[in-house]
Length: 111
Image (cartoon, helix red, strand yellow):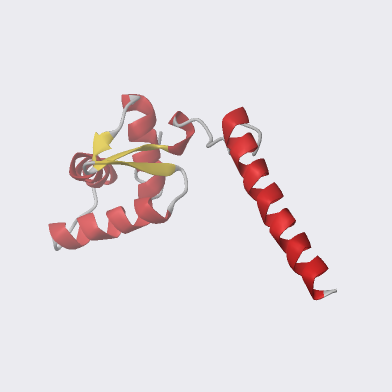
């Protein structure tokens, strides 16, 4: 990979892909800066710039405790269907039935 002509986030993506596991953000960013041979007038400013770019790129996933990994390593979130638990469904159904009965009683009293 031609690191000098690649963007910082592409270099970070390559580093994480090669590592195969999440990395501490400082280690990752320092490696990006090193591979880019980026002359930094202020190391803290360079770290902040690269961190911001990684944070805004959807290919990266914050795993917690200052660690960043790749989004592709995480299975997509599966949305639970309403019928995922029969006991939850029964409880929800019985609440709905009771509410309907009360509403019907109210309507019949008004009529």
